[in-house]
Length: 90
Image (cartoon, helix red, strand yellow):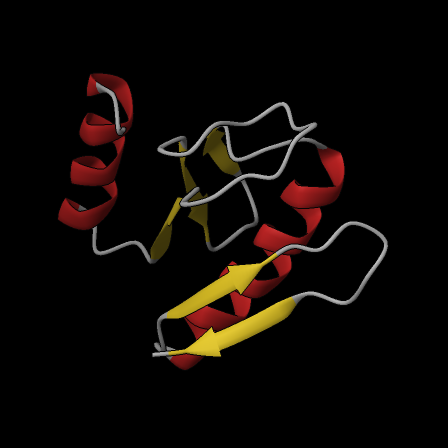
């Protein structure tokens, strides 16, 4: 769930017309440090505010979020440990 601080940050970015992606964790397989409902904002410079998982997940989310910013196309990303990421384009 998005907290007050991230909501304010998203509002600031939107008001500044700065591109960003709202990344929401929808499912988790254990063991994982993240929980469903965790949210992060990925900015065009690759900065992530919030928590969307550990280093490996952050890398995948950052890469695909930046691609989504460029294309303007939403996606559902499945990060698979020791495997290729799976992408579903909406």
